[in-house]
Length: 158
Image (cartoon, rainbow, N blue to C red):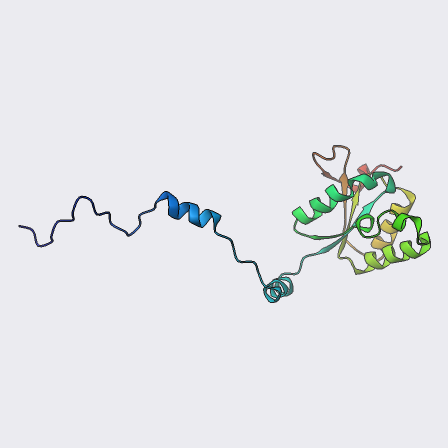
């Protein structure tokens, strides 16, 4: 007779055994959401770049796709067309809104230019360059399917 009693046939060992219910429970278990303090700590430890989104008014309708793109790239978008819509439906003088845009450029870490450049985008780009902000350029002719990073020499004018 062996030193160890035999394990009965109908008893399953519990160590390392997985069953469907346990797996499903883990899949569908609610993940605890980070508290406000945990979110603030994460932001302070790993701040993300603020990206000023330069976009011609002719491409206004792509603003949400472009904002999502910047978020997906791991940065925080500052998209004037999302913040101020289309000059706040023309209820605020354009000069006031443009001054707000310029303040956002000053506070941003980088500028990303999407699509062809209008006069307004060229002025914003000039501000960013004088402030020595890094600038990236994107071709949006295949929107909403893809955005393509391009060199400045390939940027078209409106």
